[in-house]
Image (tube, rainbow over all chains, first blue to last red; front, side):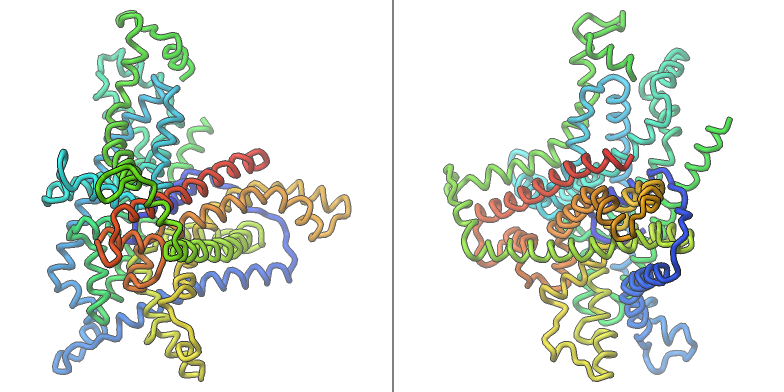
Length: 302
Length: 300
């Protein structure tokens, strides 16, 4: 999945929306003239939204293959796409960003689930502190975070920016930090809907240790929240530009920026692909949210 | 939950563990998180704080902050603040209208879900692809630019350019108004139908209802959301960088230049620039949290 730049504020807004109880549609009758006005507002919004995408689509179709190439519609109109797919850098950077996204998700979940679980179970007095820290990325935007990282880790005692591995560590570390606001919230809300105390006691009285309780009892019970968080992370990590650029990582965001400067039609195709993948991720989150609500309602009806 | 709280407060109820252990032992459970946040968030930021108070020779100084209020950096911040204000207000108003249209405007209910998903996409569709999409639309050879030229409206001859402040504002609005839709929707949901009916029963006009009931209730949410939009735009870097090639004079770009060590390179000033940004972000987010708490009084 590929997408835009990572932005904790917007990401958290998406997560809050997915977690919120779905309100009933307001059935108030609205006068005809008022309704026309609201329709106009809606249409204006749609135009603003579709316009740039439409222009990008047309641009991506303008590219022409060599005149001698076959005359079928595909190679005539989709050469921007086929060129892109034929570019090894495209696949390589996309794969790199995808893998970094997966690692980010794994680290974020294995760091935040035990923490949120523990705070709920044993350390409620730490709730405010932990919540405060998870919201700090709102205050430290990505450009400042990466500034601090490359200056703080450029030399002794912990030189990380010099090596590929070290830079990857910083990249994932930064992405995990930027996932704090929405990941922690998703996990916390997920934990709220299950009886952590009873589940833990039941699990332990059956002889399970902490790790097993977390892995086999808690994790499966909050998987819907975790999946939403994972999709959101993938969607925003893969096209991330600011942090990847300043850490000089061979990621998809910098690649897109590069071809944006020196190619004509391929960037349009890449932008659209990027957009489509973001849409898929958000659609999956909306779908998951709806599914979990249905299940909650079914459970409540018993 | 309550049991856990009591356990933790009284300092240990597990018979197997020693009397005083649970308090300190319980904190061990969050140590990995604190270490991680320390290494990748707190320490890097602290590094910038320390650097901002150091001169070129490492001595303690406030010279960087004195430099910060020079005309050059004030103009940089001014541009950032102007862009953020404009997009927060315009995006806020339009986002609110849009959210109200699908929630209470009598539009088909299915549009609500569609708009929410689209807002999730668009609010996160910032950065390089967004800048490119607008280049294809309103850039020098963008589709809309060429179309308008075709009907005799030469925008670039008329002084418009996508690569300036106004252009950046148009682009930022693309993720600002969807963000507004997302964060204002719960507040609009919270407007109870009864309030409107009560107002109408007492003979209030639609205008009076808005003036005396709905707007006062919504005001903290509206203000808070606008402030969040402000912060959102203030911290954006990738979109502006891609769109203008780093030529526009705003805070995030100035910091990018300091990172690359370009002309006018001054390490201490770079740190101070970053601190100024963090300060403005902190004040905005603090205000947002405050207003959010206030709005929850009514909208629960």
